[in-house]
Image (cartoon, rainbow, N blue to C red; front, side, top):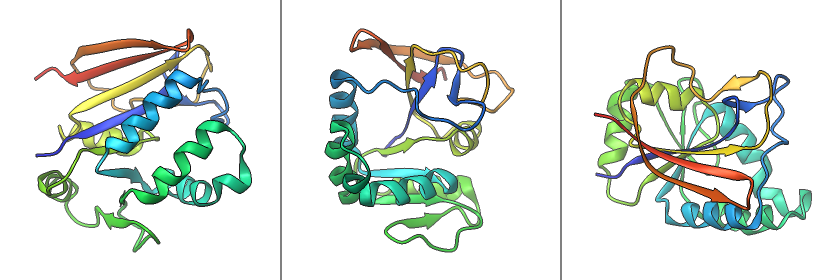
Length: 186
């Protein structure tokens, strides 16, 4: 069975976006960029909630015309080549992606995990990650902590219930960010 791996960037104080929705603070140095590119290349598919999908599907198909950042230029072709799955109750379809989640979220995601292939890489927002965490469907958490305090915004974890995790790995990148890799403590 393939796993769902949640990969997210967060501030030291636990936010994935600033108070005004800003996401201009992650520091993608060469080490972190190379590691995240390798992670993306190993994924069987990218998994998104509707709001993150809308951002990703706008930016990555035209990234080369918007950005000259080496990370963006290296990731864009990987993003375009990978299968993409959008989880949404309201989105009827998505160009270039498969849409699931219209009926029974737990059953549909479990069926995805049972399909052959490599792991599903869930990136971005916290809504879908929180829903899947609550259902016990996230198998691994890759949290990159960046050296910034945002003072508010959208937290990584929306649930108010305790979640036991077991640290599997920690790793610094570019002398500024730190990867914390966790598995659920079951």
